[in-house]
Image (cartoon, rainbow, N blue to C red; front, side, top):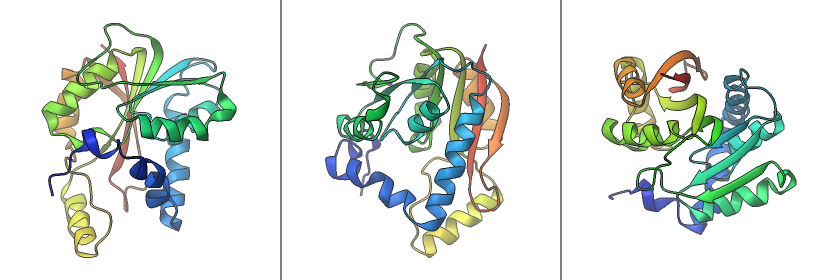
Length: 214
């Protein structure tokens, strides 16, 4: 099947089922809690009340963690269906959460509009050239730091992915990235790494990187 990330998440069914399909199991709930804490920690250098661009915002799961930590969030997503779920989830943050449908690759912003930007759970869907294109657009949203999430590639993680496929688990990332390509990705996007956080490195390939604009 030719899976297209630009179209897949526009489905209302996919949007409604997204969180339950990934984070309802015990491991999923543990990862969800850890990821939310990590995202809030990554932005701790920004003062409370700062506005963070969340692109893509998806169902607002990570936006909720930032709102709870005292930030304002403006979400961007290619899918109105996903943003509809986010609005319902974050209805109690009506004064500090806003969002809009936007395609970062086709209609990138021209100037910074937020104090920081989050780019999570999307880059691994594209080959490196596509990642650079997407992240460059997200970086334009931020006046200072950009936090990205990727799936780290290594011999150990490749072994884990093979095991997951054999066991029929959720398909792993299509385009995990090596440390060398992370440096290239950031450089081409006008960013420089300042710190990183691994999420359960023995059982997860997820890495969060805090970068500053060059």
